Amino acid sequence: MIAAFLLPRLFQTEIALGPQQRVETINPKMGVHTRLTDEAEAWKIKRTLEMVREMGAPWIVEYFPWAYYEPQPGNYQWGHPDLVIDHANRQGLTMIARLGYVPEWARPKESTPLLLPAENYADFGSFAAEFVRRYAGRVQYIILWNEPNLSLEWGYRPVDPAGYVDMLRVVYPMIKAANPEVQVLAGALAPTLAPPGSEWGMDDLIYLQRMYDAGAAEFFDVLSVHAYGWHSDADEAADPDVINFRRTELLYAIMQHNGDGDKPVMITEGGWNDHPRWTRAVRPGQRIHNTIRAYEIAQDEWPWLHSLSFWAFRYPWDAKTYQDYFTFVDTEFEPKPIYWEVQRYSRGEWREE
Image 1: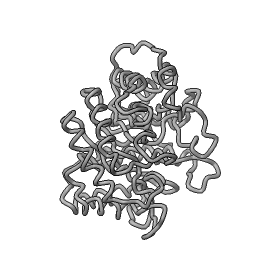
Image 2 (image 1 turned 90 degrees about the vertical axis):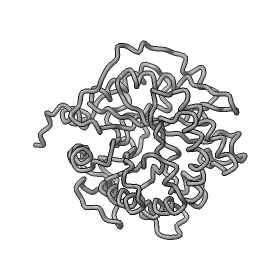
Image 3 (image 1 turned 45 degrees about the vertical axis):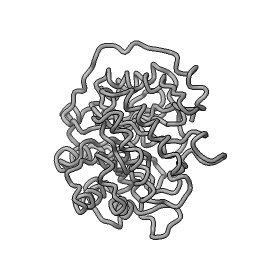
């Protein structure tokens, strides 16, 4: 990631927004995770968002790291978020903003930026409140944290559903006081089969129930879900002992069990990978089929799901790992076959051969 002190000079280049656009699609739930966090060139930000619109996806998820934009308490640097959000709005895209990543001043020395101590929950809340106040009317959805059921994402500590709910209990009211209209997404849970007592994480189904046990229902508006298919088909039946796309149904069933079934769900990360040698990958044709089938399921079978955003549209540079095989477009903006096929689907022209 880019050091926060470099951001002011990196994001000075401006590029015309252009005329207001709208997304043409047969499926208004389609989305992608754009991953513009470290994209420093304005024209590349604009081109990414243009291509998302042209593909037919009205929704995007974008990550806005707290440490980048408040490097010192109260010193907000909004240049990069302004750029991304303005271009997304001009392209007619609806953004879900993910917030997290702790600045050095809000955590112990030499600790990971994914560690948010309880005494700094209010600091995070102040940042989130400033964010939603500044972007009122332009950003209507925000995610609080990412995959807290993994030790890595919870600061290399034992995962703690009650602790995560304590954070929501502090931050949610601060956000609503700043912008009552914004919708707060909680969870963003990683699909995992971690066994009881694992030092690495907690089964997402168990974690969600423990969130409810800790009183989470009052402190979020939408459940954020991560739905990776790995090597399974999109239509493989949900099973508590299997990671597959329809695992999302089990998470929603837990919401219903807790009297929270009227709340919507959004898949904010997920999808399939077509690396030729990764054990969790599928073939490119299978990836295309599963991706489009998943969009169909979201539209036709899951009325409680409001959007489905797959990981990831494009990276600013090659990861040179299996991660590159999640993308729809390469770093040089060359569309992969999946891009063209999803575009055909969004136009009502796709027929599987």
